[in-house]
Image (cartoon, rainbow, N blue to C red; front, side):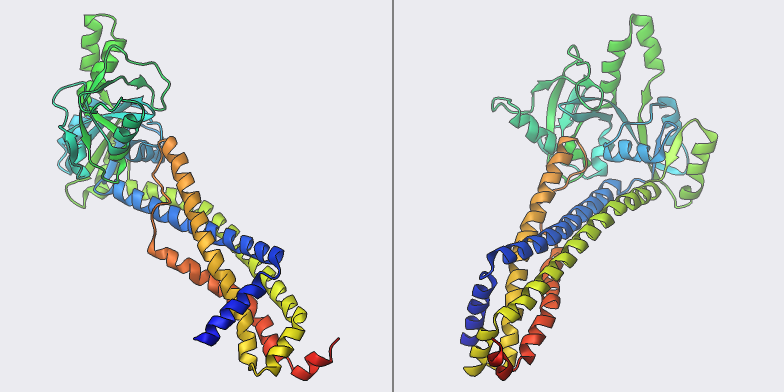
Amino acid sequence: MKQIAYMARLSWRYLWSRPLAAALNLLLLSLGLATITLVVLAAAQLDQAFERDLKGIDLVVGAKGSPLQLILAGVFHIDTPTGNIPLQEVQALQQHPLVAQVIPLSLGDSHAGYRIVGTTPDYLAHYGATLDQGQLWQAPMEAVLGATVARDMARAGQGGAPLVGARFVGSHGLGGGGHAHGDQPYRVSGVLAPCGCVLDRLILTATESVWQVHESATATDKDDLQALQQEREVTVALLRYRTPLAAVTLPRYINAGTALQAAAPAIEVTRLLRLLGVGADVLRAMGGVLLAVAALSVFIALWNAVRERRADIAMLRMLGAPPGRVAGLLLCEALWLALLASSLGLLLGHGLAELLGRVLQAQGLLPVTGLRWLAAEAGVPLLAVAVATLAALAPALQAYRSDVADLLAQP
């Protein structure tokens, strides 16, 4: 143990005897590992978010347009919907023998960048959401806040007052900054406990609330209001099949026999992940290039170190150090570099993931955080050790084969 500790101390001093070269190698290796860490964190969390939010949704029905846009808007709430569909059409789908459940969603307004979604209690039950405070809406113009929405509203300056019972106004549009419906304020009836799903960043209310806000803002008289009530619409409907046979026949029936569009989440998300995978592959390639450059830089530094330390190597050999211990010094120097780069790379990768998550959260997109540690990250230190060891093999072999007489004969 004493010999190992001595080799570790000596290799540490050798490493920092050339501070600029050591810092450059450390920087290159850390950047490559940070890139790999960022890809691992982001890809794993996005996959989990997709799987969690899509669970139990067999089909999404909406207006004609892009199927992927329909999925992004109706399930993940990160895109604008393709339009509205008649309520009567949705009610007809509820009676279809192949449909087990229909959950209608009505979009169009937002508050502080968070979407107001008109729906039924079935939407909360679908994700297994529970209340942290208050109760579900009991009447139109009552709303339940998702956990993320409640947290940000509390930070925004509610003066420490409880959120339940507070009032807020929705604005037209899904991105904020639209016309505020000041004459139709919502009252907070409850706050959801965090569920780690899409509900965390939504404001949920009865579908009648969305109709009431827009009908009162659009109607010019009682006759106009009555006409609007007879032509009510929703934005999308989430369907669950009654039998596996529905997956074959129901989408075709909806797309060909009605004015609606049916999009299968599994198909569209697979297409989306394929597109995202291109970006992930590019980042992985960048990380691989950085690691390759770092390995080459470490190799050159250690190769030159063997030549510069001829006198030291000769002295160690004359003092009785076996060739394997001399070669071990170079390997230990590379392992020190791998250990430092692993720590810095993991910390930097998590920092970048947290920064990315905050940017996505500010835009109301999918949640990503750098505050999670994944089992797959255990491969990052192993990768660092492999790269550093590979770079040190040739210099270590050269040191192992060095002859004391030749070393002393050289000027």
